[in-house]
Each structure stands twice: as C-alpha cells, then as structure tokens.
Image (cartoon, rainbow, N blue to C red; front, side, top):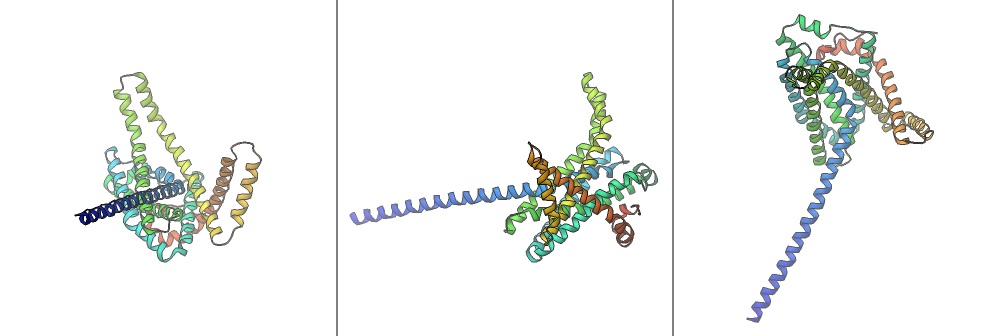
Length: 339
C-alpha cells in the first residue's frame, strides 16, 4: 500500500512539473507573440510613414476621376477604384514583392529608384502644367463623352495610375521592413496595403462628398451657424482640394528625391547623401531650438529640389521617347507636354 502511495505521489510530482513547464512555455510563447506583434506593428508604422508622400498624392489625385460625373456615381466609382487597389496590392504586388525579395533582392534598390524617378516626373509634371496648361479640361471632356463611356475611361485610367503608385508603396514598405522572416514581411505588407488603401479611399470619399454635405446643411440646418458652416464647406472645398494637391506634389518630389539619394548611397555613391547630411547638420547647428526638425526640413527641402530637377529633366525623355512607345498603356498621359 505504501508503495502505491509513493507511486501516486511521484505521479503527482511529475504532473506538477509538467504543468509548470507548460506554464513556462505559455509565458514564453506570449512573450514571443508580443515581440512579433510589436515588430509587425513597428515595421508597418515605419513602412506607412515612408510611403506617406505617395499616399498624400494618391488622395489628392483620385478625386479628379469623378469630376464632371453625376453625383450619384461618385461613391460607386471610388469603390471600383478602391476594390481594384485592394486586389492589386494583396493578390498581385504582395506575392511579387516577397518573391523578388527572396530570389532577386539586389533588384529592389534599382526598382525603388525607378519608382522614385516616376514620382519625380509626376511631381514635376504637375508643376509644369501650372505654367503650361494642355489638353482638355474635365468639363470639356465630360461634354464630348457620354456618362457611361466617361466613367469607364476614368476608372480605367485611375486603376492604372493606382497600380503604379501601389507598386511604389509596396516596394518602399518592403524596403522599410527590418525582419528577415517572410511571414512577418507578408503580414506587414498586408497591413500596410489594407491600411493605406482604406485610408486613401476613405479620405477621398469624404472629400468628394464634403460639398454635398455642406449644401445639405444649408438646406436643413436649423441654426444660422449650421447653415453658415454649410456654405463655408461648399465655398472652401476647391481651396481645400488645391491645398491637398500642392501638399501631394511637394510630398512626391520630396519622397522621390529621397529615394534617389538613398538609392545612390546603397549602390556605393555616398557623395549626395553625405553632402545633404552635412548641409542639414550645419544649418541645424546654427539654430538654438528644434534642431531635429530643422535638420529634417533642410534634408526634405534639398531632396525635393533634387526631385524637381530630376523630374523636369525626365519630362522630355518621357514625352518624346517613352510615351510614343508605351502610350497605349497610359491613355490619360497622351496630352503630356513636349519640351
């Protein structure tokens, strides 16, 4: 009997030891999970921040695709573009980015720089158009095409433009991920893709409907202050859209120039990056406060100037050589300026 009790006591001790080990494993798993989760969130935040310039421009550009179309079609059109953007990022670009990173990682920097050149061109072209208007306005375009064909053309153009911007966002995001695990990279890219697309097209939907909301307030508002706010919304939306467009253009030039400078450094040419860093550091050292912000602002300004210069230089190359060859892929660029 005493032997049986001793055996049961040993079994109980083993069970306690096993339970303690399970608890330790659970604790370690929780710590690992929390660490992985923190890494994913941190990488996603960094990637989203790096792609901020493209996000701002995407939000600024998209509303033009519903200009001149019936108000009832605005949200359905935005949803069409957003749905295609989700598909492009998650189904096409995310797997492509992971495969590229796994088998041809050396190609990421040149592709990133190619995307940076595109951003510089787009930003410079917007500035060029301010001084050299060309092509049909959206109002004139709406008069020459019926609503159905105009919508189809606008959606097709928007999806193509979004695909290019999405490819750049995913490439920038992949380059910002510090983890070497492909699962972590996939999760981060998925979070960035879903988050940025939701943010951009949610903001666009609010922007294009803001004037309608203002008009409604002027009609149903019970207080004079409410009606006055509605009138302000209606009158101020063109200005707000212009400001967003200006910010988006500046962001494109800054991000594009920054990508080129960092790409050159990664390829072994450290001169531009070191020079900009020295200039920004010297300017920041000359002020007594907000030195970090001053250094960032100077760096961003110089990157933007480089982006503008590169973009202006690319305009004749794109319009005289690239667009005649690949123009069918981008019908919305057919009226690009020639210089």
